Image (cartoon, rainbow over all chains, first blue to last red; front, top):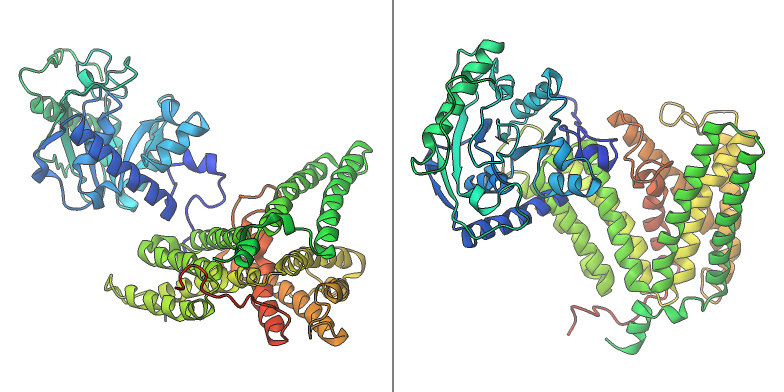
Length: 253
Length: 334
């Protein structure tokens, strides 16, 4: 006969503030209800105000873990990507957000964690340890991460180079973790980084076939391979007429 | 809803009808002010270390928030009392669910939370049959929905944890709320709340003064037989004296019955405390949460109340000490 096994919440004993900022954070019914409400509101908003169109939904894997990566030019990006997922996956999806933007003040940290279900990554401290904790979360739960590997919102609308951090999340996993490339078009026109209020521009999200690589070594070579593959796939999804500038030949990632 | 019901639920003008309510409220206010002063004086005078001073002051400031939060709803009206106890039940259950990991069974956890909300409604509605029906209905619902994932492994643990959480933090605790259906509920509930909190204080002081033999060291190393006996004596005396005024003119106002009530409050209070200690030992955690600075989680503070509420309710109801309003089903009735 087995003994009972208790598994307390992994953030038990943390103050609310520390728990919001922790990647071990687990959600109870209240947070689930809050983010469900937020999700329904943003979905309605994106569909009605921005006429969000999603192409290639069939490429989404049926079950976690997987990564969704996309170009980043607007605060609308994360909600739009979450809105493309079916609801049961969206509730298990964590946008990985910049700690210094979303998790410094108590109010934004509460909003980002309770409503957006975001996990923080600190741009000045995103070394192996921080990425290792995120990876443990991704594989252990398992869940879905929504990531913007450019590391920041584009100030010009043009897509920048991907940083190799996603490599640390997927390389060396016991079973390959699919990376789903997405391209969101129109978000920069609707809500660029310097704008306060969103304009009613149309958003088009294109989802590409997932990249699954099962022979990735967990070192720089492997990280760069998956990063380049993901970046190329996202670029390939961009419409030809869009103002996305082609990648310069000498990349520095 | 007629005038009598409306007055009971919302009329705060009658808050101080009973001299016991006035006395207890003043005593608590005086104790808070006195406590703050003593801690400040001890700290300034250098009688205690800086770390201990910080800890004591944090505790006192927490009490200055907690005590009004406990007393105000009781003074404001029965509706606020019932809603406050319902909220306390939900928050205590939340801590239990997070500490045991039961919260990961989202659907079952939702059923327990919904069950506690319905108990609150039953108390507010003064619908005792529904209040009695809810435990079995909720447990049957839990057992049924726990089948759905089709994972028999851990079934018993899932259902048992949900049932335990519901019975203790819902059904037991909400008996305190149900007492608010007695138009003279204020002194009764205040007396119970204060007696339960002082019971802990008495045990602490008595234990420090003449506690030598450990009570149950594996469960709670700090507790002594001396502290426990001291608390029995002091709490029983306090409840018997206050009860003589509160229950004047009812069958409870007999010396032996009042002493019985006092003993019941003290025993159930200490058992509730030990029950939570056992749960924490079993789970391997120190505090249930960090909600109250200096105290830990809400459950660390309100553990003693969980067993006192049903014990006192049924003792008083059996002896006709509760004068529950004859107007029942005030919201759901026709």
